[in-house]
Amino acid sequence: MKYFFIFLFLIGSLCADEVDVDIKADNFSADKSKNIIIFTGHVVMIKGADKLHCDKLTVHTKLIESTGKTLVRQYHAVGKVDMVIKRPTTIMKGRGDEVTYNVDEQVYIIVGNGYLEDVAGQKIIKGEKIYLDEKVGTTKIDGEKNKPVQFKLKIESNT
Amino acid sequence: MALRLFLLSIIIVSFFLTDIVVKDVAKNDSKEALPKVSFMNSTMYELNNHQVEKIVKSKQAIQYESKDELKDAVLILRGAKNTTDTISGKYMKRENNAYEFRKNIVFTRGEDMQLKTESLNYNDTTGIVSNNDYFVFNFQKSLFSGKKLYISKNDFAISGQQAHFVLNEKDL
Image (cartoon, rainbow over all chains, first blue to last red; front, side, top):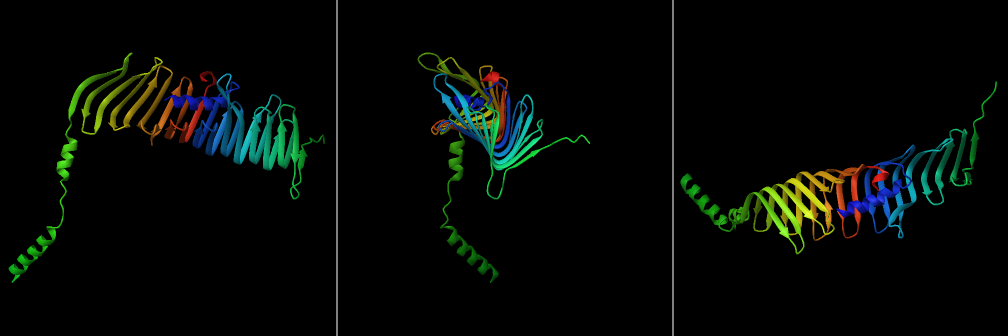
């Protein structure tokens, strides 16, 4: 039964920043030797006020040998990715074919039909590749030849 | 004439029937079904050089030629690091190195960890724990439930279906 503990420590790394995590999926698998946890089919992850829906979520972890703790290195969501990220001043809504979040860099990368909405700032960004750097607070957008970048600002009219 | 035909048909049928080998199924079954030893309301202790390693309690324990069956059984396993694991269930079977647990299975380790399910298989040779039923695993305030649990001790792989995790960071 100690393998349950190993699995829990792998999974536990998902909530290393002291927020409870609720994950539902049709299938899951964890491979300690590869340091990955894979959830597939109707994946729903709720972490505090943040929500993520996708078809497949792969969590890459790393072992910190000095402490013996396992931490999340990267989240990689694929297939109809839909996410809501709550921040102190706003709510960010994102969609795309793939979303990667690198934990150390605190960078979200939305790839394929990327959509990012800053609800409080009333800004909408569309592009093939959207980079959202949470550490610096910047956004970079890449378009494609047939799919130029779109940037929309909602401006309230005084009339 | 009819009587002759009838007798002739009996002879022909009996000729073919002589080639059919009748297996001694009943004899083999009865041999397997006969228990070598059985106990009622028993408690068995297994000792090593240092401590009581295993305690097996059951309302009925039956030992056959190639398997053991326990009904309403409780297994208490003591680990080297003073851990105590308890597995209880309505029915348990051990055949070679394969263990089968059926109905109302509760696995506990101390007061913090509990697994409940209706079936659980463990193969000591392959190191694989598996089941086809729903399971609920509680670890302090965290919950992990699902179906078709698979744990491989050898390659540290775990999988399942219809997974639901509610993880409390204080438990980890």
